[in-house]
Length: 497
Image (tube, rainbow, N blue to C red; front, side, top):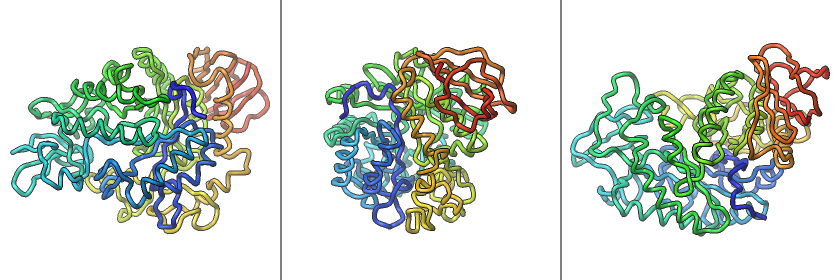
């Protein structure tokens, strides 16, 4: 059921944040059996693959991105047997499985760190001025007086990728999961493993160093040597049948530098975060779309599109309401390339902004006051009081009962059924998925895109209804249409000429 080695070029991938997706044993934490039990839901939604955020053995100092054992499943999520059953059932349902790989750092409870194997980490007699992405210094002093580097939380010491034993270990980790049938990897902090020689100071005096990532290079990210690692990994991926792939989470300073991560001898894709950060306005969307497609041309690989993930506020809240979120989703799913969805967005869930401070677990909140917990609240399955959970690890708003999968199942106008319809049409229509687009003339607040053969996409981001200037059969709209041929504000329409 899983032909086509180039499946990733136009795939719709659904990110599962395991703690918050589905709980099979009633302990308040999602698990792999919960994911397995919801595969029919995901198959009906119409996704091509799932991406599992970390489920490895972890003390959960950073939601599982602090890995203590890269070859096992944390007991809170289940067992390796549960993972194997999930992969087998997913493949039977025609769904591929991508797993997160966290190579920049391990947990401080990893056996290497616990055994004092300091040559596999970055220890120095004195710290430099580097800052943690989560706030504060990026160095912590060990008991003997030396300092170790952690670009994230102190419980996440950075690995030393100059050590050949580290490189060999991760080549073996790749093979371990490929042998278990995974179809690809999402590479966490893909730009971070190699640091500038000598670990020079950044010398920033204007705010946090992390805020410099979009504009200029820093000595701990996007160093040229990181590409040697991916050139070691690509032959491993290519040696397995079935189109095994890797997608980079890489924040870099220019399109040209991002392009270096992608190609026949490195990775297959890189996340396009610019689209997620765009404003809900025609000009902002068009600027990002044109830039992203030009970047894709540089490497001959399709771009990726994403509106929400486990690190950013949900786009219902970010864009200012459900109508805009639905309109942005139909725009995204009509663009050439692949799309990544985040669990719960198909239900139209907003960001949870009022979590009590004492329940927040994000280390970024604990260190600098920023929190990603609001997009990680468990998703509602039923309309009853527990919404399919027993004492969930983060509390769910009572208002979410009306947004549950059960509540939306039989409502033809629900966001869940909008996603189902969009993914079905995307699979069936020859104009969608890969290919190119043509911009049509439109007012300032409107985007009009033609996808050959015969599909026109109109997005109205303005305050007044507009007439698109083209006619055709309405295949799908993100909101109600008045019947006079106009497109209301905050609405996207797919038209068949």
